[in-house]
Image (cartoon, rainbow, N blue to C red; front, side, top):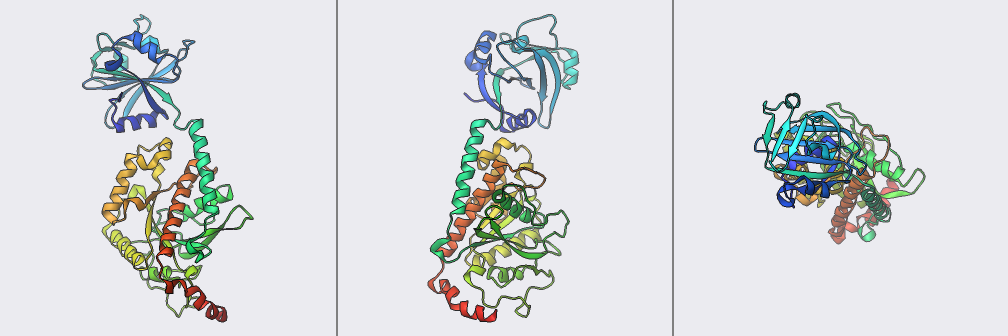
Length: 435
């Protein structure tokens, strides 16, 4: 049994009512009789009635539907392509909408005749054509449920602990390095520093803001920073390092010629970027003989999901150039889509199965088409920006993406030729002497 609501209609209603819907009754299936509707739908908790006519979609949201016949104020709404117009009516209960009562003249549904009668005042509030009687074709009744019930949240908590354990016990492939280095690249303001803060927050147990975040068009991060994260305040360092870079920009962003030096491990922590020229071996802290552990093992291109379509031709060209440099070094790139929670038609309940959500799929396809990244490498994250408390659903998204990056780094290490894996032992004496 399928609803006649379109996907967009259902998502807009979920946003409006902050719930998800389970279809209980469909008149064309169960019969156009009030008796059948009450038999199936009574005592089901919050209820949504949807009426489909050839020209209109009408709905009544009843916050309480119980055996005590409690009357509560209800929301009547009319739906069109761009907005939902509603008004408060009642206090009524479910049966008041289907049985004639001289005191209840605002709205009456006649299932047998397939007609809805509304008062003129109600019609005006909903901005409908001034026809007080509307013929309809279908009636559906839904049970309204919390987007995230206790059972689902227990599953989220269990998954979070599993991911935390997997990352804490992770060891880089072939034990070639102690920590994986993950470089964050992307346009200014895409959320690179915020992603680091979000990952650190998970392992610290509260929201932190070590990396500065801002909305300045020139970006906040102007230094190359390598962040090692501890497991808890005084715990041991985790097996990865997040490397934050200056953002890409059409003007004063990261110098594109710096990217190969970063990938190959020549750029030291706290190096001050100069958008006019790249680092050179003459720089005082230039790393002459980088070890394998100094190099980048995974690159994450970070984009704000809301601005993928607005990327300029120049920015697209820069991202593609950076991607070519990454591929040339043998590193498999991934994509992080941030700010998905602020996308239109995305609810918190969608985060549990975010990759099945149509708006997210469309964003992934746009990234694939415009920038050439594989769909399987486009990951969704949700950064902490204004929150003060941890959110286990956000944590699961970010930890899942981090685990994917660690696996991508393993692919890089496993694919290294034998001569490359010997670099660490070969250059270790010279590095020590340099120090």
